[in-house]
Image (cartoon, rainbow, N blue to C red; front, side):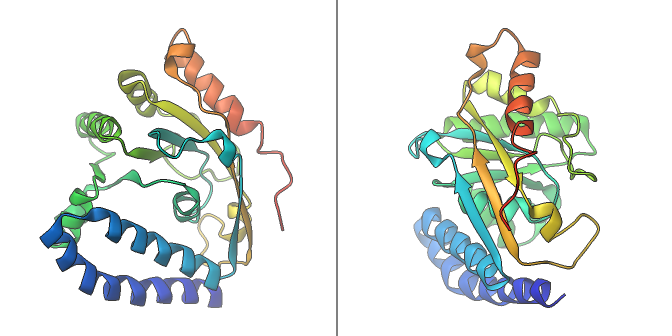
Length: 235
């Protein structure tokens, strides 16, 4: 439990302190990049303090100047911070719509082009996918977990169709990502964080235009992610 406490305490102290100075600067200047990279530095520092190391493989497959849809497997609450901390460029994510109602924070999230989502409302979820498409067209990447929720056994669950509609409509390349070892470091339904190395594997990008239909695209992304799940994870 100590590592979990260290991680949450660091984030809980550093985040509001950074916001105290950077939120006014961001609102006055409209410069969201500084806020984003400081926030990312806080995420990375917290992970290191808690004993979480990250091994990144396949970065040579990426063009930092290009917007991608990163699609990853999902087994742990560690996956989002580990994956986002591994990316070479600024990215957007879908976040619970309730967070956008929080004063100041909600405005900052909108300025950062984060996308609100309500998974309980099908029509609203479709609108969120369309909004994410606009973010991609603006030049920002998106991080998506196509399973929709964490896997209980580490195996891939069925993929949601929405992210693949987004890839087809925008023409953005999809980067399949395999994240290893996070399930052992912070298992589902556990709050105990263990030290270790999370391995993030970036597979070569694929585009919808290379496939005959959405199903073939989904299968290609799934096979790329699954192909590395049996890989021995770093200790």
